[in-house]
Length: 420
Ligand SMILES: [Fe+2]
Image (cartoon, rainbow, N blue to C red; front, side, top):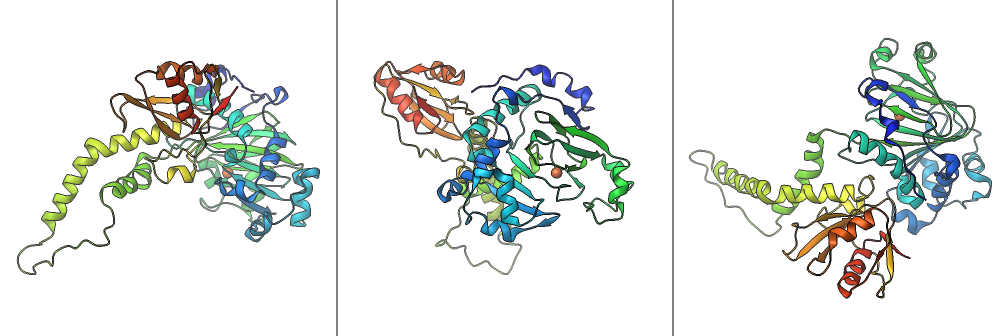
């Protein structure tokens, strides 16, 4: 199913959020009654992780809290349990933890459920279209439980987020500006329920009552805690707008160094003379100069192109670790389709095809990014732009010629197409 979100949702965003720095509740924006993935879909995705093979293919990580205690010991044994999903997640977790109230946090759950990935991508893309795209994309950080207060106490958020509430219960969400928090709490650290300031904080909180289908825009640097009496599930979409400096130091430079300055097991540098001025300043400076020249003319634009296109082609979700390990890899591991003339294919949600003609391919070829992967296609006898445009609009594409069959077969190796 496909969901269309009106750009009107975000039309007054600047006023409502005081230019992005104040929390704001967008009420009833998730079409749960029209089939948008709800809390049962989250539970299904969680139980699917009990399959070891499936778990190994994802970056999904679980944290379990009983009260405010983080219980990593329970995570270690979690997937050795029998899922027992007949009674739902609450019954399973109560039995497993031996506690009536629990909290289960799951990261990157979009990788465990095609439906969660597709539906929440439709919603996130409406925000991106209106507001722009975060450099690191987003993920699904899911909070399930019947906890009386978020296990991390009252704490500060480090990135802007859209907190999508799926119910079934209602959640009271309390927020404080940094100034308001620091005027009551003891510094910037979290305040837990046993701290003297805990109760006093609530006298000065801004309360948002989250009903199923509501989305809270929660800006970075806002202190917050969720509290509830009944079980509910929320999907947080953190918007990874981290600084360019972090992106360069954590992502760009390591990749460029791997390309241009490989660790050399066999090579040698000369013994350096001890007389005269510093003997290795000149050769090291020369090496770095020539390396940087090569980075600026070739490798940096190449890296940035791969990164941006892979991220955008993945429906807004951050790159899975197994695909991000080598930014220049094609990563196609799905078997190619058998296609006969006239047979049609369609794009799977949430992916988007992106055509990039001049990237590591011959003049007669083009590179197409899809699902964080890429293929090189012969563009001589195929109108790649037209076909990718149709796929991007989720129209069926019929393979008419041998060249088109070959192109769609190659593209099917990304795992993002279905035969119809
Ligand atoms: Fe938080």
